[in-house]
Amino acid sequence: MENDKVRMYVSIANQQIYPHKYASPWEYELEMSREFLPVFQQLFSQMDRLEFRNFLRSHLPYIPYHYDRDNHDVDRRTMMLYALIHEFTDVETKKFIEQLPYFAKGRPLITSAPVQPSN
Image 1 (cartoon, rainbow, N blue to C red):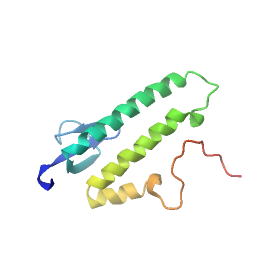
Image 2: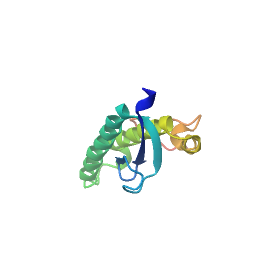
Image 3: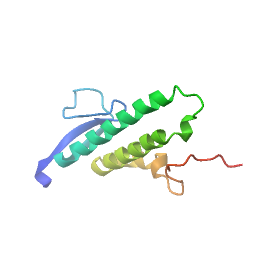
């Protein structure tokens, strides 16, 4: 299994994973097994569908976005993507990802319910 690792380049902004460094702009360089490629592709596909549903919902002004379940589902998938990137990247990038709010100790992770401001 160790021999079939490939170097891939992930763009969260473009929701793409590239096999070549110069194919397109990317944010994260990963070394992983080809088994995980469909996982990235599935997460990006799910996020695309959810974001389209968010776009449709955005035309209904009586539903605030922070109460929208699809919005929280996009956030959950973003957390999953960063967890995967954390698993397969270098030490420097791991340290950066650990600084993100998703990984901060003592802070709640995103839930399906909206977070109410504290008074």
